[in-house]
Length: 350
Image (tube, rainbow, N blue to C red; front, side, top):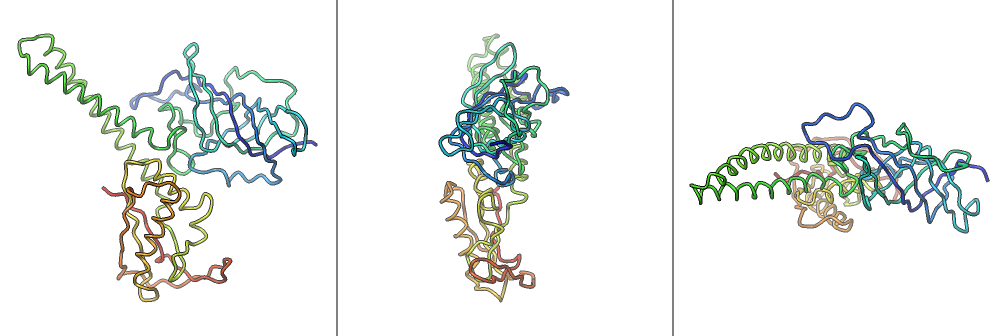
């Protein structure tokens, strides 16, 4: 059977980048391909073959989208359209919540192993032989060009995401800065305790200057960290419902729906607390429905893996809710009424 094939399976592969170390905040991004990443080899096991190519189904917060990825061995198992292994180049390959297994440096370049679930589409014909990953060209580059800037950090599909642990990449960086500041404060205290020790005081002055630089870097990282959260929530901060109901509107539920993406963001920002603010549509709804909606969203997020201690429910009461007309929506239960006042909004606790 001739391709192209649309497949989903367990992916393990190899990648490389010419960048040997993460860039600092003040460093300019290279104008060439130094910071880009090339996935140049891999295998797909436990493969499912699909008939329609629907990449938007798999493009979510933690996805990593690659174009023209060579040297991927497909192992179809017993129910595949062909027997044995075949080597293909993928026109598009989506790595879903990928994890770095290991990295190592060779001659100033970084190589590594990666694993994830993957979805993609092959070229029509298989490769006749394995292609070399060099020279670095446009093969297998990520569409998110800057993801390597902080080693495993990128902006993701919907505003925020990382290759390893979501937005926690910057959280651990902030924690590292704080530990370093504690060490520097210890050096400065040593000078005050031994005032006649010139070396101790010289070290303390260096530590003071270093402390100022680290504090500036820490403040910058915190601002970026909070800005990333704001971007991530920009399109997913409202969950909608039907009239007098705690049933989520179809546009807010389902795989990669608003609630699904919201859960991923919250699990990436484990140090943040979120208000779930329930709303109702004034006199045309039960006054207690706002509280019930907030509790429903909290319950669903906890079921999806969010820590309950991060979530605080609130009622808005909405005495000033705008008198909006009702719209109709057809679902499996028939025609449902709704408007934009019937919602839960997400706020970050300061």
